[in-house]
Image (cartoon, rainbow, N blue to C red):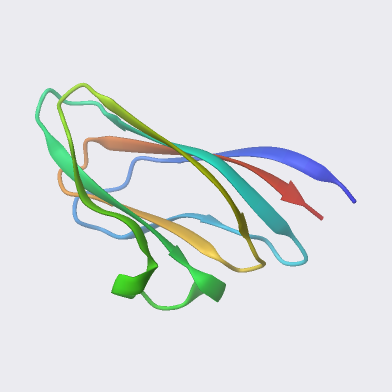
Length: 108
């Protein structure tokens, strides 16, 4: 068994659901923390979802939906849940001013 610390980062375009992380084949992952940083003085909103086995987007997958984040602010959440092979963490922001960082451990 090999455990690897991983950080995945993305600054997606506006109003575009984006895959931040996909669990590789023959791997499991444990999410620890996700941060969302607003790099603008303008308030905006974000979404974060988990798609089991890479399933199509569905409302039941959302951990956070249209959460307001003030300008020049950071949101952080401790997650502490496992992901299985091919699960996807997806992110979305309304103004393309947010960066997302996901911290996790992969086990192969």
